[in-house]
Amino acid sequence: MDIRLFVYGTLQSGGGNHLLLARGRYLGDCGVLGVLYDLGGIPAATFDTAAPMPVRGEAWAVPAEDVEAIDRLEGTARQLYARVEVPVAVGPLAGQTVHAYQGERVLAGPRSRVVADGRWEPFAHSSK
Image 1 (tube, rainbow, N blue to C red):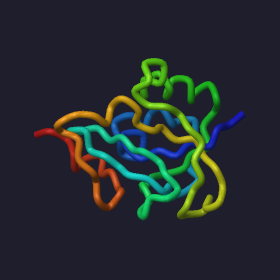
Image 2 (cartoon, rainbow, N blue to C red):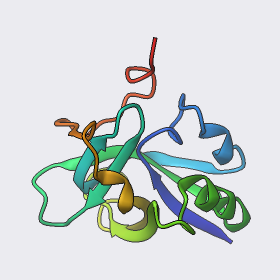
Image 3 (tube, rainbow, N blue to C red):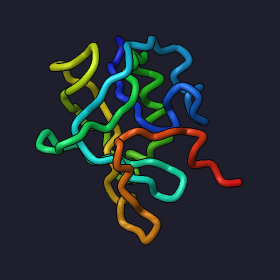
């Protein structure tokens, strides 16, 4: 069974962890209402249907067994990120729900800043 997953950071096409979606099927670019943060080279988001702007990313249909590996990457057992169901606000899946990783404990910190346009650019944040 596939799980519809919204990805907004390093799991996106071109991102360093995109290989975990190798057996997935791309469903389209979309947006989920919330706030995107840059934690100093890695992204985190909080989702809120009352937010004025969407977090931009991609939707994928991913085999359930592959999602288990992504849960490990995202630290769900350590409560760094939580996999939550959220409604899609923009894109081909608008009005439908997808799973997404919401920052839990990772948002606190001096290097955390809001990404105003809600779009994570995988290579724009790499250290040189």
